[in-house]
Amino acid sequence: QFKKLFEASNDQVKQHELSLAQLRQALDAATGAKEALSRTFDTSMEELKYQIEELEDEETELKDKMSHAEEAAEKDKELKTQLSKMVHSLEGQVNDQELSFTKKLADRQKHLSDLHEDIEVRDRRIGILENKIKEEQHIQECGALQVFNLEAMERRL
Image (cartoon, one colour):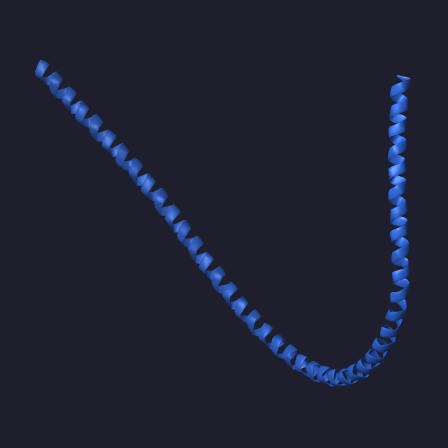
C-alpha cells in the first residue's frame, strides 16, 4: 500500500511540475504581451490626441445642429398643440357616437328581451293548450270506452 501511495504521490508531483511549467510559459507569454502593450500604448496615445481634435470639431458642428433642432422642436411643439386640440375634438365626437351606440344597443337588447318574454308566454300557452287537448282526448277516449261498455251491457241484456 505504501508503494501505491508513493506512486500516487509521484504522479501528483509530476502533475504539479507540469502545471508549474505551464504557468511559467503563461508568465513568459504575459510578459511579452505586456511589452507589446506598452509599445502600442504610446502609439494609441498619439492617435487619441488626433481623435480628440476631431471630436472637438464634431462638437462644434453638433452645437450648430442642436440650435437648428431646438428651432424645429419649437415648431413641433406648436404642431403638437394643434394636434392635441384636434384629438380632443375627435375624442368628444367619438364619445358622443359611443353614447348613441350604447343607447341603441340597450334599446335593442330591451326589445330582444321583450321578444324572449313573449316567446316564453306563447310557449306556456301552447303547453296549456296541449295539456287541454290531451285531457279532452282522454275524456273522449273514456267516453268512447263507456259507450262501448254500455253497448256491450245492452247486448248482454
